[in-house]
Length: 247
Ligand code: PGA
View 1 (tube, rainbow, N blue to C red):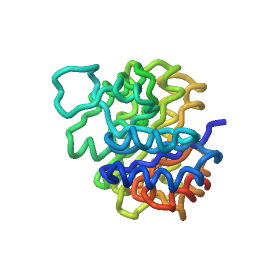
View 2 (cartoon, rainbow, N blue to C red):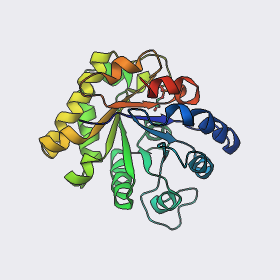
View 3 (cartoon, rainbow, N blue to C red):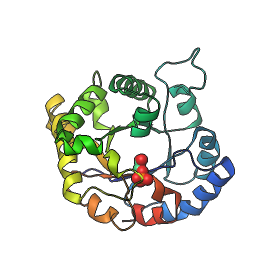
View 4 (cartoon, rainbow, N blue to C red):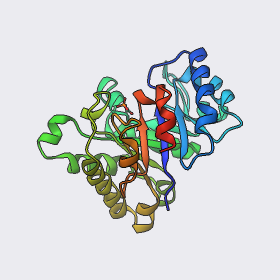
């Protein structure tokens, strides 16, 4: 039985002071529920938020990392910098990074390998644009993104990884995929994991849905057979996140 995992993606929101306020306001309400809860916060908020949630079950994640260990990569953050402070998760290949920062599937793969090697749990994002959905290539595209992201990843590591299916047209738009649309793509992701590894790995890997998840739609989405929780953007910055976690 897979444990539901709900991650908040704060994106480029909240100064360290505001981040601590939000983490404090959430921590008693989302602690100890049925789901794993992760707050993926901006880099400068990591340390204060880790401190704020330290005696809770809430884990903290980053929103990106670099695939090299160290060196002349101005503005970048390494896996070891994250693990040393206690970060447990990292979002990789979010569609905003793919779109605005030219992240390719190959880069997503390198980052995934580096995260796993460092002991971080990757939350690997895949998903199609509206045009791609209309062209009928969603499943092929998401299969391809998943296959490339997982190149060289062992079955053991894949079992504890997280994949987030985020249709780009649903992110921040208030438009959500229907429960069935989301389920169909998440099932296809699980199928491709089964083809790469085996049935046990496909059964173990957790697949989230992301894209305008809110308190009103989370329960039904998370009840779908292949949806194991959500990656939540806008609603993770509000008190509503509590209801999503305690679906
Ligand atoms: P949203 O963002 O919930 O605001 O649509 C989701 C995401 O980008 O991870």
